Image (tube, rainbow over all chains, first blue to last red; front, side):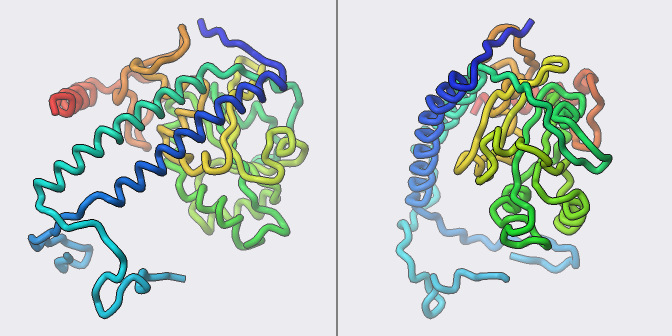
Length: 60
Length: 258
């Protein structure tokens, strides 16, 4: 059986605004991680891989 | 209109600053280091979803009326018989940039992210887009853009009551018989994450409904991966295909060893 607390409009809004701070913190962490990804070094791809396309021609 | 990153090239060489070029081993080591942060972020996201599942619910007492492809529809009808409903308010109406050929560019970007709804439906969850445009314009827009999710017309104060009269946003509802509750609301940059099945489920009251989740007692939960199916192959209430259970167990064992 599932039971869940219900709230008045004001209580619900207060709970949502409280959680919104956590939502924003997570978004900032996510943006920061994306920035770190951009700072990662690159590795040169030196092999020539070939793929096939619909018309059969190899593409790199 | 296609744009190319030509501004970044001068004389065939990259003109921007770029990180150092390293050996494959050094690259692996740098990635491993960042992977620690990637995993920490994933766990923080799971923890946030667990907090969302503990939000109180707000009873919806107004009878809202929408226009749908088959005539009038209530908020209950938008659930389409399922227990949960996600509603995205998209701006498509006279006066909005792009009208009448297109919906708002940002809302169109969101619409283009939406995964096949069969996967959400398999977790007892429906998705609906709502706009103020009449159904005939919505039908034309869906055909033009290849959007297949249900899309209803707002006819009353639904948008104002749920914080989406002036800005886009995603409202989440739960249905207990005929009683409807608002369980969550996402807007602004929160909407960037919307569209894929996992992120949609993570904003619902029941979550992904999987065994590993930190959910209140009595919430429905089944094994992860096992409920997945091809989008054209779901059968309501069917037990997972035993062959798929075996394949997914083997796959899971493999990556957990890594």
